[in-house]
Image 1: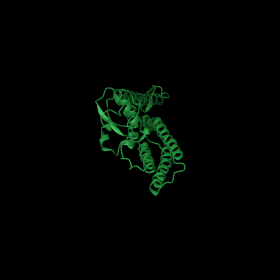
Image 2 (image 1 turned 60 degrees about the vertical axis):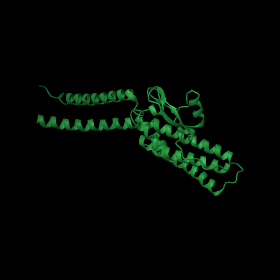
Image 3 (image 1 turned 90 degrees about the vertical axis):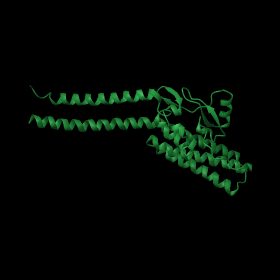
Image 4 (image 1 turned 90 degrees about the horizontal axis):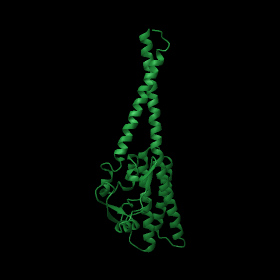
Length: 250
């Protein structure tokens, strides 16, 4: 009889531990997606502001069919990105949002070129330092702290800053109590960058090594969290077993 009670208790304990583990995983996923979702929503808002500016610039202009089509494409991109950002539930979902935003900004650049009577712009990656800056105009040599020199695409203003030896205007995110460049925010931000740069082959280096891995700090945090999780699990099991035998007098 005692064996049956013990086995039943262990089974219930295992089920409870599984539920507790799922709750922790859900809480961890929600905490991971929140800053990425906020980042995506900020980017969508930035595109909306740029569309308002474009609308003001185009006031009184007669758009030809090509410019009209590109303008509508930019508007559709904004609406689609807004919907996708609102529905974002996993960090990897943000890639779809930034893919849409990249296409919308290119469509806006096409509108401006058509209105000015210029050739359509080359499809280049966004500015690496902050994709909200729009299309890059050139590649500049840049060395990340503790990294190797490499060429990265940059907008006109950041090209000038880098060539002058000044700090580029870098998009930063909160990681704990620190503000760091988005590419140092950890793997949750990798899909964010892939949406902007993933279709451009030369940008493959961005997704290699530890550029998006959070470095050794991220590794330490991950191991620490793993240790805490194991400690919680075994602590729960120990408490449960102890509780099972409280009613027995040996």
